[in-house]
Amino acid sequence: MTAALRTPAPTRPPTQTPGHRRRPRPHPLTTASAASRLLVLAVMSLFAVYFLLPVWWLVVSATKGSGEIFSGNGFWFGDGLALVENVQTLFRAQGGIYSRWLLNSLLYAVGGAVVSTILASMCGYALAKLPFPGREAVFGTVLAAVLLPAPVLAIPLYLVFSFTGTINTFWAVFIPSIVSPFGVYLSRIYAASSIPDALIEAGRMDGAGELRIFTMGARLMAPAMVTVFLFQFVAIWTNFLLPSLMLADTSLQPVTVGLVGWRELQGYPIGYSTVVTGALISVVPVVAMFLSLQSFWSKGLATGAVK
Image 1: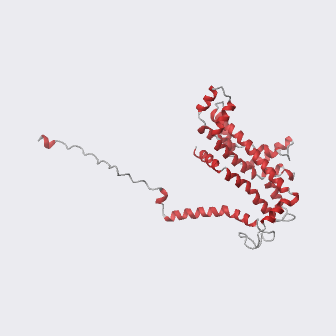
Image 2: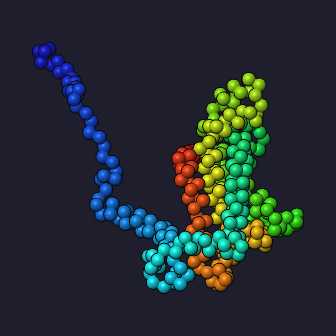
Image 3: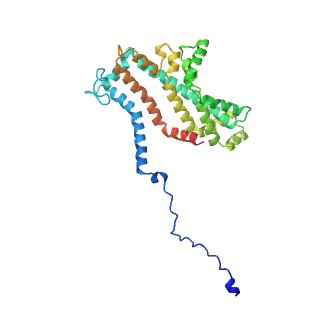
């Protein structure tokens, strides 16, 4: 009787054999329908054509003579390749002023980007690792400056430099170029995640000064510093509004302002092929800078986006 009323022992789930494995979850992209994948591919291809088509037109037009740019197929080469002749005409036009414009752009862009990177990394390091009163308020001001469009400051900067008497000088373009709120923001985020507090404490215990400690931490901030340099270099190189307001002397103008001045001549005495060739050559330094520092730029940008 007691044996009949005894409850059966609970059964154990069957143990998995060593060869049994859980089936992996399918990737979301593999479960998408063929129509959705085709739609995404079409949209991405459309955007690629939209961005690359002007570049292709610039390359093709630089190989044509002045009479072939507006005749025939604008997106294909002409009867002969006149790229070498166009480049020679470009660097001989108006006494070789284009070479001076390229040199000015390099001075503004490289010098401004280097100084801006140093200042931004130092400010970002201080906001991340040095406690001081009002630190969060300063960082909030930097964030507000990131959201402020640069053209809004062009007229106030012109009035300030006009009051100081530095209009139509090298410093009127160089000094505004060394300020980068985005660089300060990115440096602060990267310094907070890449520089350990133990490194700072060890440096202080060894008697190192704050500048020496920052120099050691700057090696860990190298990807962020390269990213700031690239963004600032491109921003200064492509800037048109500020130098066009500040500079009246053609010998001080960058290549962007100079090419627009040539374009306003309506093809005489500077031909359209010369202007197009100058625009193509002005893109080469930017592309070369991105290709040479691409790995550092990708690391720094990904870190800033994740953090």
